Amino acid sequence: MSATNRAKALVAGEAGGAAASVTALLAALLWSNAFPAAYQAARHARLSFGLGSGQLGLDLRTGIDSGLMTSPFLLVGLEARRELGREELRERLRLLLPVGAGVVAMALPVGIYLAVNHTGPTAHGWGSAAFCSRTVTASSSH
Figure 1 (cartoon, helix red, strand yellow):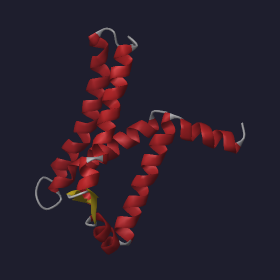
Figure 2 (cartoon, helix red, strand yellow):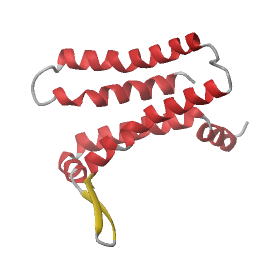
Figure 3 (cartoon, helix red, strand yellow):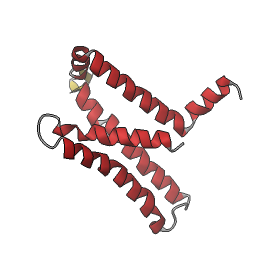
Figure 4 (spheres, helix red, strand yellow):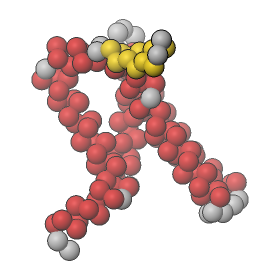
């Protein structure tokens, strides 16, 4: 298999999405640590959309927190619904393992994060721990 075909297969599959998430995560970590002032300025940039007299505006951080961070949960729900529809999870008891594993995969890093950072200004960052753990889990399962 040529390198081009391997790259197409990676991008087309589930592993491609996980690889893109890990790449974006590493780029954000590098950017926020190498250029903190530029990173903070971008996080607080205000984006707005308007139609006629109506306007919707959010800063970039709120848009990401409210929109993009919820998409993994939406996708997991859609995948579970698809498997229920195809009767792969016809018995509700078979749904217990994937749902339980997902809850533990999110709760465990959050618990560790809060155990270490339970007070102070960093205590509100637990959502990043859950997202990072899910990204790593998704990339390592393929």
